[in-house]
Length: 221
Image (cartoon, rainbow, N blue to C red; front, top):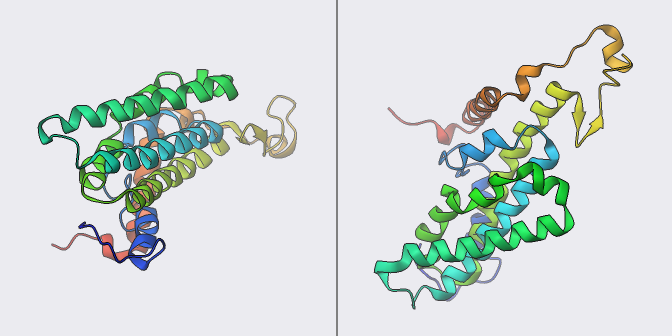
């Protein structure tokens, strides 16, 4: 997208940078990026929420930094510069999590560090931030991060609810040990929901539902 000096901060095109990744151009279900973390961190809503915030922060602020440097980066080393920017932001996010959410940081462990290899991150740097000003780049990163986060939370919602009977660690169906609530009727948690293959199935179901609702996403034959 070419730079436009006449656009306001919240022009229609800028708003679309945030809203398009929610549906029409979702990075996970349409662009099929960031699938690995969607499989790995969606067993619990809490982990999915923290991962979504982390990726959103790294993509949004990384886009801004790359955009600010876009006219200074020699083409032959642009990927190296992007990796350095991504690595610095990921390290910062990791240290913040260790300082303020240590238990979650331990659970996410290596997956936070692997944000640097997330296709969404490098894709937005290369496809958008290098060709646009900081503000649109920030909105683009914010939109793609939130679009990614929505899918993580949807998948985690069903996996944690039916796999553990909880949401954000809070008992929803009752106590499975003392057989209270829904468990008193004979309900049993579905352990398969906690396995990685079910995450892939859930992402597939989300894609199927999305394409059923949004006819624009159906590929023309």
